[in-house]
Image 1 (cartoon, rainbow, N blue to C red):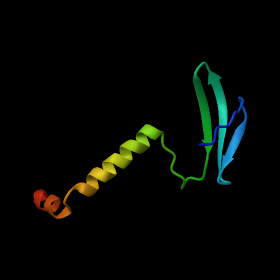
Image 2: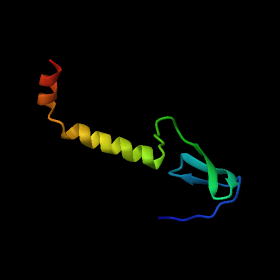
Image 3: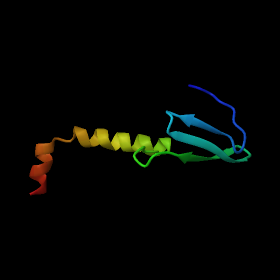
Image 4: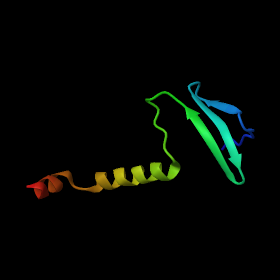
Length: 71
């Protein structure tokens, strides 16, 4: 993991096309802004993990059996 120190208004660039800017700092919370191309998906980690778990669960379902249950 790369750990960086940034102040309000400062940014960092990832992969030449994603910019992350510190917008506000209040106590233990930091508000960030992300500028990225529309085709770059951006998720909060807890949402990303939920999507991954749901995708794994969908893969574990027997597709033929699921189709039979539809009819």
